[in-house]
Length: 452
Image (cartoon, rainbow, N blue to C red; front, top):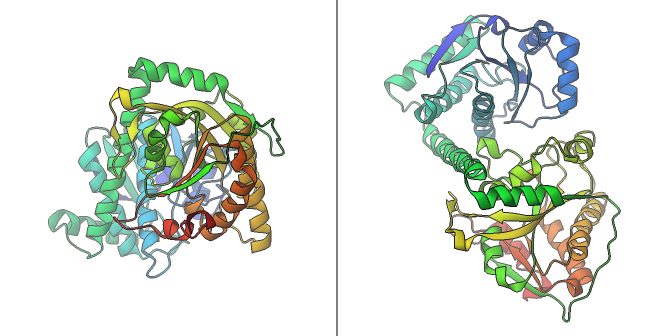
């Protein structure tokens, strides 16, 4: 894998995939983005992007190249620069990684990048170059044989000079910024998680039990409407409410002998598995890495794309109250910082209740409306779970990566647990530690009235 910095017009790159520095709405813009739309065929590319709908910063989506020489266009959203915001540095690195992972998925051997976020997103050229070069060279360590050439196209002399300078510093000294050590550690973790998920997907086609499990789950998956009310049967006693410092699927395995299991998946409303392909750490991504869930949701032949993900793409980030109910998803890895496969005797099947959290990173909504939205959405989770005769329901944080206040979720969980506890044997709230200590979410949830 060669990393090559060139000065020139990216629309003329002779590669398998060209990366478009896109905005989150994937709409045509000025500069290189506009040039790519014009070269590809403005109307054709605009229509393809409108079908995709939305892409959050750090992520990528793919379309055909249409009239370009490249077979594909990978639309990647970089962050807007804000001084001293280190999260944006990581998002910029994630943008390069997510684009390369999509290229890898689509068997592209050569990719042309622009200098992401250096245009109207105002990243200083030297910092943008720092992040781009270090990220690409770290990626090269693992994927050296997966690509032939990776190009960075710089549209003017000043950007080209900044990228060439950073490349020389990186290659010669490797230690050109104090924060690069932390950034590289983050990237290594993401690479490790990408490889874990690759192994998970390989298991789908290698292990007979998982092949059968996925087939059965797909055949019995249900999409529940927003106003669903089911027939529910009360248990002999009210549910025992438990709070655990643990990963949710690890807690779930502890209750395997207590009856029918169900686990809440605080999911991405527009893409199955969220950003699991980029090594992202989040509720749905973690669950996808340790189970057959991704294969069950990522089914373009079913009705989920049109009636769930497609619907949510049109919802202006709020998403819908619809629920995907996936019965018999197999958990076959232990959830941890880096998940590990379990012995087959430790595998367990669980129903997964997927509910799309609203993305509050992009909108503002007043607290009263927000509480009503969350109550109605999570009520559907409890309603569908109870109607399917779940005995042990595993809950966790909800929408934490979408900037959702977990104090509000705690209040709503209390109300819904009081209303629905007669339909379950156990309701377990499972929250993993943060650096070996109680997480902020755990500290908040342990103030619930059930634990005092």
